[in-house]
Length: 250
Image (cartoon, rainbow, N blue to C red):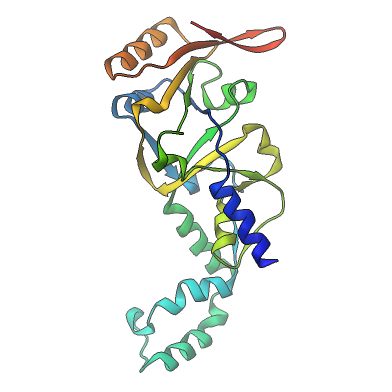
C-alpha cells in the first residue's frame, strides 16, 4: 500500500500538465504590479478563502519525529545530559502536546507556506464572479511548457471530503493539494512556495481575457501596460449571452 501511495503522488508531480492555465484577477494595483514586474504573489495559506484548505490534521508521531526530536531540550531551557535523556524528556512531555498545541503548530506551519493558484477553467461564471470582481476584471492565460522552473512546481488539486491525517511527508504533500468537493468547479492547479513573489517569463503570458463588465478605461490601461512591458498576448473578451459565456477574440 505504501508503494501505491508513493507512485500515485509521483504521478501527480511528473504527470502531464495542461497547456493553458488561467489566473482571474481584479483590476487593481496588484494586477499592474504583476504586469510591470512579471511576478505572481504567493499568499499565506492561512488567508485562503476556504477554511478547510491546507487545514490538515497532523499526527503526534509525525510532529515528534519531524520537529521535536530535532530539538535538544537544552535549546529551550530544559536541562539534559545527552541523547538518551533528550528522548526521556520528550517522552515525559508527550501528554502536554495535546490537540490544541498541535493545532497551534499547524496554523504556524500554514502561515509559512505561500500558495499561488490557477484554474483550467476560462468560462466559469462563478470564477468570473468570485475572483474577477463580478466580471469587471480580467483572466490571464499562461502556458508554462517552456518555463521548467514553474512547470515542475505546479500541481493539480484533488477534490475530496475525507480529512488527511499527516503521518509522513507524502501525506503532508497530499494535504496541501486537496480541497473539498464543493470547490471542484475551480479545476485548480497551484504552486507552493515561500510567502512572497514568484517570477515568470513574459512569454508565459499567452492570452488576456477582459471580463464582460470591464470598463473601457481599464481595457485601455491594461492593453497599454502589456505593450509597455513587452507582452504579446492574444486579447479576448468574455461575453455573457443566453447560451452562457462566450470567448471572443479582439
